[in-house]
Length: 251
Image (cartoon, rainbow, N blue to C red; front, side, top):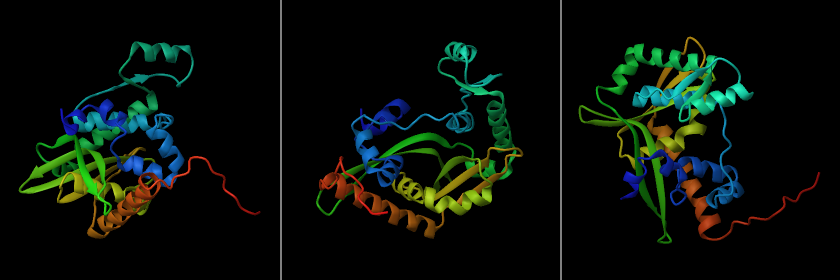
């Protein structure tokens, strides 16, 4: 079984440590120590309930799977624990979050620009891999999982679904720093002509934004990816990473 086929399974994709992803490169840039510990299986991303809304919407909108169930209470107490045990394999969402997912899904279904963007037959949750050759001759293996790939009229483009607690204006203002590297990396992995962000606010009336990654946006992403890989080469291939050190300064 090749790696792309193996990565169809989400558990196998996220458990893998041999490939670098956009998320792991971001982690390394922010904290080489956490990245080092993550690769050794000694650190993992903390679970956060606010990711559940996005995960539920992704499954419903992109894959047609309703993986959430409503809980009329708070995320604590024995009753909540018992309800979770009765619904193993489901995302247990408090009423507000559950209704938010349903509202966002309904809005996406009704916006004509979204329907046009997604086309008649998009492919959801597609894994991909690529190799990045360094001047030293070493190869860095990279992976990604596309939310959806659309092929229509000779065009092949990627649509990445994002949810945001911020207004769309603020999201778009910060997108370059948050997502340009991902857009460039995924465009390379999946050989896409264009990259679009489909963004929806997590507050009623669930405003929707569709943003195409411009050439400047992707060029910035390319620079960010080069910097990330150069840092990885310096620290972890050339052996300059120090797992134990102190920050020394003067106050």
